[in-house]
Image 1 (cartoon, rainbow, N blue to C red):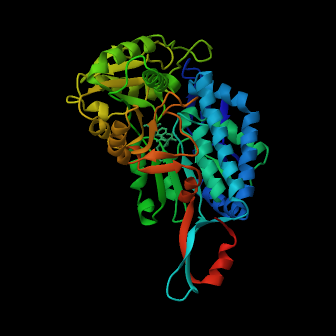
Image 2: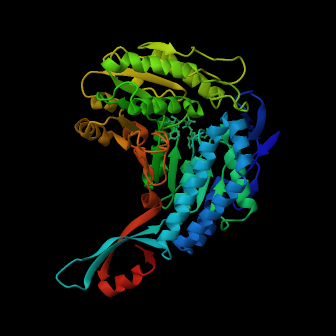
Image 3: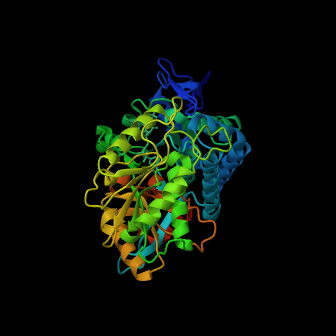
Length: 511
Ligand code: NAP
């Protein structure tokens, strides 16, 4: 069985002590073990700060972008191998694994391109310079410079490649070294990606490290120049935020957490229309892709009371046709959940939804004796009035709830208390305007479905150009968004002084 090491302090290191076993979630076959015990985390962080940081800061944005391009090329060369690992260790269908790995490569390429566009500067010029007094010599200019610490990036189990790449791309381009920590249960993809990058010596020493296994006290070791980008459960995010060192040293923390994403069908949409079909397609994709284990997946489907029966019947039929099984079989449309812990959590979540709604598709509990399978499930609510768990409990699996609305649905959507994405399907401009105004403050992204947009990836796909994150339950964080992604890793500083002096200093920056 493979023993996964960690790449820290510029070399591979094996953990000691009790290791966690990584499984194939379709067969429960043991594939690898991982332990971070005994690894000197403080030394790993210090190596990144002392070696990786200065090396990256010496490069221009264009040069850092070229490194991202080389990482993307290396992952592209290893794509087939990474896809196989995603299928075996993640329970992904081939299409699910492509979503993760191709998404990782595309995101790296997008930030490589941004680096090239930012050019020869080593820091960012933030806005126009300002005359500060009556004398034109008295001048101010905001700039944003790379922080001198290390960016610790903790990822969730569902996107081992994309999560790793999207976070690392932004930090490396900004000029900060990265220590990435994948979720242990599905770490084989990120581990292999790191092997490929390290073997080819693409990045400067210390620029990228990977810790495989338990995080131990990693967040407690961070200081004032470090940052922590976390993706996972809201509970873990809250625990990290409350750490004494995080509070005392104002460690910058970004949390990407849970979300009860809603899809809303407008009252103007007729059954069988192109918009209606798009809406159904997006819901079906989100319930089944990666077995519903996407932070952006639609969890709540809101439809006008009059459309309830049609939507229910169509979804029951579509979900019933989904073939669930071992994703190594190419006919299979939906694989298992990623781990036994996820299976237990999803079953508990479905039981909770079942106390206030009616299950109208799928079977309760475990589907097969071996493997962490459940069938796609649809729960129907008679009205929003008796609904509580559906707005409060993220069931991180192939589970969706259908709710009718009579009044404008924005208030129902807002009961989710903050989300990553809300999708709206309507051609009524006045209704859309009201809906956007109602849901926008609660979300990081609003997806406006339209059948004329060709090849729309739907609301569940996070794009490198647009921000990802959301207020409240979703963690209050923000990642990606093109150039916006860099700001988390940069310190904005106002330069105040004589205009020619500041102009000289600003020459090393990119506007
Ligand atoms: P989790 O238990 O919070 O784990 C997430 C990551 O945090 C893992 O790498 C885990 O490592 C690590 N971790 C656990 N305890 C930690 C601690 N005290 N300090 C530092 N790191 C710690 O979350 P999960 O249940 O596996 O993930 C599913 C959740 O992630 C879902 O709720 C989903 O909505 C959310 N998610 C959000 C987004 C987003 O972008 N907003 C994306 C994907 C998933 P180990 O694996 O070693 O325990």
